[in-house]
Amino acid sequence: MRISIWLTLTALSLSAFSNAQAQTAEQIQQIQQQLSQRGANNSAAASAGNSGVSPVQLSASPTLQGNSQTGTRPSSGQYSTQPRNGLVLPGEPTMDMVFPLQEAMENPPFAANLFVGGFESERTNSVNPNYLVAPGDQVSIWLWGAVDYSDVATVDSQGNIFIPNIGPVNLLNVPSSQVNATVTSSIKQVYTNDVNVYVNLLTATPVSVYVSGPVLRPGQYAGQATDSPLYFLKRAGGVDFLRGSFRKIDILRAGEVVHSIDLYNFVTDGELPAISFQDKDVILVRPIGPTITVSEGARNSFTFELKPSDLTGEALVDYAKPGDFISHVSVSGLRDGAQFARYAPLTDFKQFSLRPGDHVEFKNDYEVQIYPINVAGSFRGASRVMVSKGARLHQVLSNIEIDPNLADFKNVYLLRESVADQQQLIINQALDRLERSIYTAPVRSTGEGSIRVQEAQLVTDFIARARQVKPLGKVIISENDNVADILLEENDTIVIPAKTDLVHVGGEVLMPQSVVFNPDADLSDYVAWAGGFSERANDARILVIRANGMVDFYDVDDNSDVAAGDQVIVLPRVDAKTLQAVKDITQIIYQIAVAANVALN
Image (cartoon, rainbow, N blue to C red; front, side, top):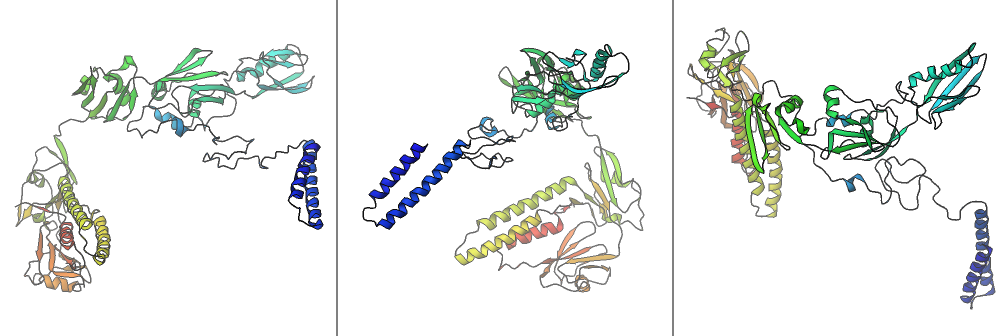
């Protein structure tokens, strides 16, 4: 080390003097002082090396600088003495590198929810009473009375603990609940009187178990010998849904199968073999067997792995649990390299032979003969009646009790689900046309383009609000005291309006309110009683919705006939100068206002 420092100083001195031919004596003296200081520093480093400190100093912090939670790789030159906690080392493969990205499965495997359970996090750390003592376990021993003795003995490689004056006591494979009795029995053979004994198994030696086969994270995992196989499978990420078998999981010991596990038995019947693991045991998940997919009509709509001997409809029904009203089964797949499909009653399906890859759907294919009809409004009795298929309106109305003084039975109307769906479709189609027109309109100048952008934003907001409208599906069946005897559909609602003495006025008026019906008043009177038109009102388009659902449009000067129970709605005026799509928007506003009522002559 001294020779190396002297050579370094000599080289620096020669270099300094060779470049200082024209320098003064004072400058040369300064250079010599700097070289002397460098020599002192090097000497200090050399002495530190002699004291046991490496001259190559690593980072002072022994921890990695990455984020252990996100798996950030540490930079080169750093090291850690702490557990990695999922931190990825440089060059180490990750799950993203070795496992292909898979899309979410519509029908996951049956029993897949086992691996979201608490087999890992809820594992107990106490000694199981059925745990079998193994080498390395620790046993505490207390003797008092004629002899005082206390110690913690370790089970040696032969399965014995040694007690002075007693000798070796064999505890290998003794259940933890029997340790006290076994040791006490050996002690009592020597100390027969006046000696009290207390023995306790302190710790259970962890075992190392390998998990292999189609699992997400195969490897070596530590646990207790009495831990469930599901604990180790959960530690390994669970069975691979696409490649691993839930029905064929073997426990290997010295290359021989000592247990076979069928997780379907655990899910359906709670059966799981009691296993005491030993070091170097292997949990081997076998490749997946034949699968059948159930996608509809069952309480368990999963992908089922059936054994070759169970590829029958009866076995699938036992696992899938079809709904209570299932009548038929649809089966599709391949037979002899050709497409295959079969639709059969559920009773026949139980004797059906399935093939791997079949797709099964359970169907409720009973013909509806009786369905419910709802009643709303002013009536007496139950609000729902059951009718036979083909029933008509008059048949139901004749069985509904009403009070003629309270019920406006001449203006009865229907609410029908199929009509509401059709009304919704019409409104959505109109909104789609409006959206296309506003975004595809030609622009002739920059100024017009900026106006169109603002209009597009306004129209977009209007479309978003308009799509939230839910039509009533109102069917007009009464006019001029006549009620059409129409065929009823399932879940129809018969509405019998209540008699009222009010007329409701709303829309673009100053004070929307309900006013008492006056037979001598006309449309302009009702608008005036509601405070008159607002600034945005269109007095040429006033909507009058009759009690039976019929809709009429009037001008404020028209001699309209307003009756009790009618609704007067003043529509807004849309300025065509500021909005390009005024025609489409006005039409949609009218459709929404009347909710696309269906009229029957």
